[in-house]
Length: 544
Image (cartoon, rainbow, N blue to C red; front, side, top):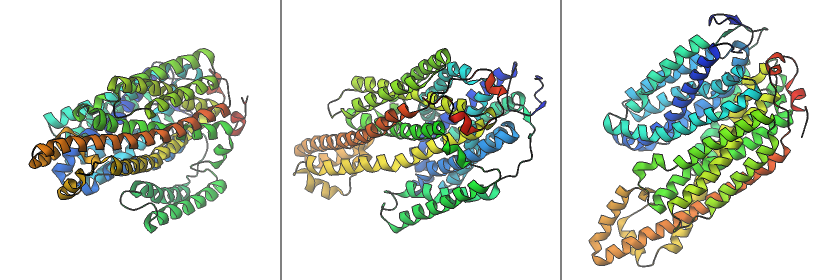
């Protein structure tokens, strides 16, 4: 293959010196795309204050999440035919435009719309990097690079909140979006140079109608899980209508895809055992992981009392062990060419980590929580690359973009579904326990203060404000304040305990499911040479 970046190819494979430039570009893209979410999270309180947009707060994440989730399978399918390059470029441009508009927004509505534009670009940056890694390395080689890829994710999760806080305090919240622009420009240059132009090997009829009805079916379901338990009750007619309507449209989508000449999301993939099992395991793993990542900081800040200003450091031990687990897993797969037994062990470690987190109580110290986080991080970090590599290895190279993006798409839906479920479990447990933990003398005092939400008291500033209110009652007020804070800690611990019990269920299902994962020996050079065959044939090869 020529090293001329303008050379037209019939596949996405990258060889020679260009593959190292492509790898650097992929890792840069993954880093700043992953970091974007954590940087923005740190600046949210300032943004809400400046734009007076508390009512649209959740949409800063929902608009981004929905746009990226819906576009992932579209990018994956089209990139298998037309190459990764045009969609990588389109995604980077859209992400950069969305970042620029976000930084310049003057109202919360403008910012929400701009986040949607960012999300359209992010869909490409979620699906293209993993597929491009597969264009560079065969499955057996790929294992040793899993640690580096995991390190990018882990470092971005650690650096993001710290960088976001520093930018917001030192400059302006607008720069948490503008900071994306130089990264996007560098990645764009790397993509243009290192990724090949691909000529479609056959005439393709775009599944435009299938894409349309997929979007029409997904949007109401995503809205239902975004609004459920928050804006509307789960049993309300609004939520039920959205869910039922979305499911009906998706059933029509499935029927259409079965008859489409070149479907955007091929239903036959789900007939392959290894594909279905990696999707199921991925959903359970992401749901277990989501609860721990989202709510561990709540416990550490609200119960242990670690300053929320350093919230970016709370999950650092878990991210470091996540990287370690990914490195160990990748090296093992490269050395042995196998993954099922490793998946069993990784699933077991994840279950143990969840069980340990469920044992936390109001007296648990932060060093103990660190140990528990390390165990969970090792399990998740080791399991995640196994699922990615197993599904890539099982299908012909020409289908890699499709199977990658479909896997990511389904896992992201798992995270969307997990969010309101874990939130409801935490809130219900907290509110139920608070009624019994609250001393009787406190109730009339709180009634005079109005509606005091426990979730609003996780920061030292909020606790200081409520303490000031209690001091109006003299010496007795100080005692009542400490009793109040203790009751909240007890209730919050109870809610988090229930949350991690649910996490144990998801982790255990992932562990049990790992025993049904077929073993297909990792392919070497023949992976790129084998452009023939079907996914079903590959998926049924050497079942465990």
